[in-house]
Amino acid sequence: KAMYRHGKRSNIFADTPMQMQPVRLEIYRPRFRCDACGKMFSPELTFLDEKRRATKRLVDAIRERCLDMTFHALADQTGLAVNTIKNIAHDLIEELDRTVRYETPVIMGIDEVSIAGKYRCVITNLATNNVYQMLELRTQDHLKPFFKNLPDRERVEWVCTDMWRPFKRPFSQYLPNARLVIDKFHVVKMASEALEVERKNYQAQLSKEDRIYVKKSIRWLTLKRPGNLTPAEQKALEVVKQAIPELAVAYDFKEAFFRIYDELDKQNAQNAFEAWENSLPDQGLVAFKKLAKTVHNHYDDIFAYWDAPFSIT
Image (cartoon, rainbow, N blue to C red):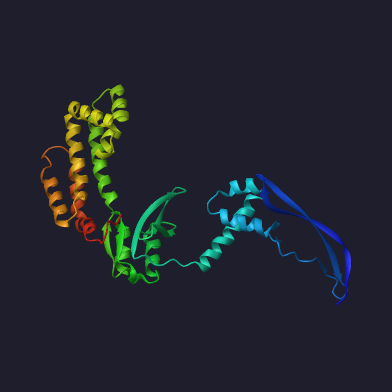
């Protein structure tokens, strides 16, 4: 078909920044009209992304950075609109969703993270320390379909999570070869929380001025493990324990509970817990007694920690 030159047109395209400043290219292209159909054409330039009004190298640079930087920061850096950055990122995510397949974890972690005011369920591969999947919510309606449709679900041998029962119910039904182990840090955290209850009980009896001192000065001393205290903090802790005997007792029970996980053998760990529980006084330390009850409620899953091939947390 005969093509006739029909003037030229200039367009502005964004390019990669130079010296921290946005760059724009003004591209002049001739236009041609088709004699047969009357349509207008311009030569295609392979280094341009016509859809984004940007060079392909800029789009590629944004794709490399958009998962590590905020859209607003990239917009400021390149001079592109935030929505353009967002659209490039969404295209990348859709492409990754189509092409990238993660291997089903043999050792799976299940936890949650609060994002935008909602708890999202996070599935991790604990053997590689990578995020495997994130579910919109941590409800049964989200967990059950995930486990039901999980590829190669028979590969999963261990699942590490907290004591939130909705996590336990769906996985046991769909992961036939998996054993549950309650995460160590969720367990020992309860001992720290029990100590905090005792500190607050003591604190409530003090004047306002003394309460502020106790909260600021004593809280972190008692929550830290002894090995993490500086020499000055160790001396300060001894002064606190002498001055407040009730808090000293609670602190020692917290530390004794932590030391259960220092045992290398399951039977020794179970014996250590039994000795710890039997040493609890008949009166007081209610929060520690609740901790002992919680351990009994999840006994097998907590002590499965010592059955695993290595420390799973």
